Length: 176
Ligand code: IMP
Ligand code: MG
Image (cartoon, rainbow, N blue to C red; front, side, top):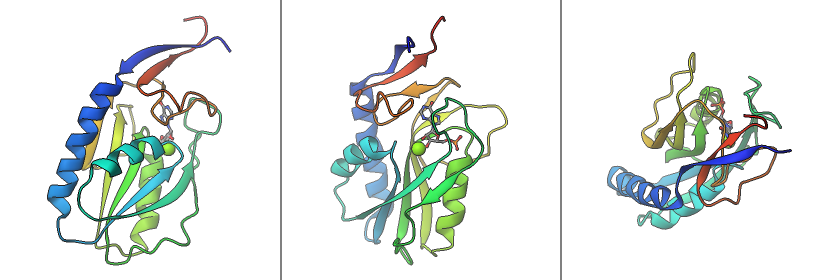
């Protein structure tokens, strides 16, 4: 593989934005039982930073969804797993996601989580990719808008690689 990386968002910028998102979440959820539902695996790095910035009590849980497999284009199928033990009835839930692309994954997750009757359900996504024909998703807590390119780093992968980068880069395919 000879793809290369082009830096897009630095670790410092991410850090600053994550702190701002945490302040917003604190202000909106003071006094109500709050659960952060983290979408595995890509959102784990973001969630780890976000949760350390949130100063009000909350519970953390995880769900797994995958639509990409080892490709850089959405396959259109979303698998949702590891959700059976989730107990969020009456809780204010924030779904923590790395990136909303076509919106398919988050829309499926929202539909599934609604069945568990949370008191409220909001989306916190670090990135929102602007793609034509995407499912409209209301992202209450959004880190950054990014163009329609494939990005890696800060938890996000290409075929399981690059999750460990502290900033976010664009993956430039070989030969471009
Ligand atoms: P969607 O269902 O098309 O919105 O895709 C969302 C999921 O695909 C995210 O949770 C990511 O795991 C993955 N994804 C989408 N775009 C990218 C990208 O540019 N880099 C890495 N993963 C991505
Ligand atoms: Mg994901």
